[in-house]
Image (cartoon, rainbow, N blue to C red; front, side, top):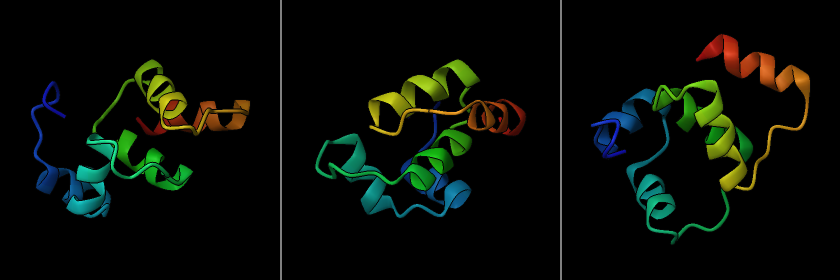
Length: 76
């Protein structure tokens, strides 16, 4: 988030993900992240498609289908 210059509060407003969850994900206190939450964070951070793919892989939610890749590239 620091490289995107966005606060947890701003990201919460963009995604609907609570600041507590965002903090937990950033600090590795929240080990499980659902795919929908990970996608919302990608969109909220305005990640480029390749960045979103890396983010999702690291979050344990790899993009497995071509349909998901198309969705990500069109919505970001």
